[in-house]
Length: 98
Image (cartoon, rainbow, N blue to C red; front, side, top):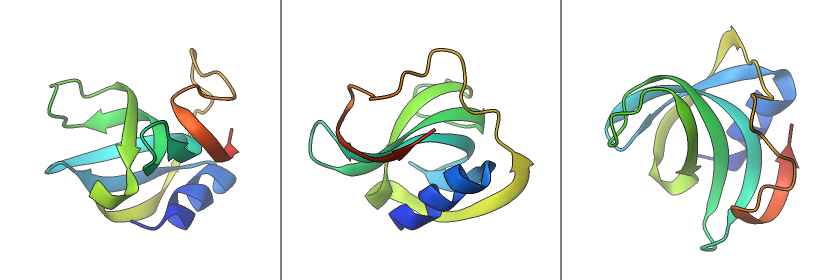
């Protein structure tokens, strides 16, 4: 998944739908950057969908290389969600954030 798709969702204030680890997910992008492990990714609030940890809602860090078929939805994002802090410490560098 290209990072610019996540940046577009953030800029337009809409949710992003994608496949990740075999699960369909709808997420609100809060932060796009490079993770502390050096991987391009994003911090998101998962609105609904599946997950390996069986947590369909909540904070997730998703890597772009593992995301498939990402597309913008018409569903408005509610970002920023409670608990979001600018300057996410899970990112070594931030390209954009809410």
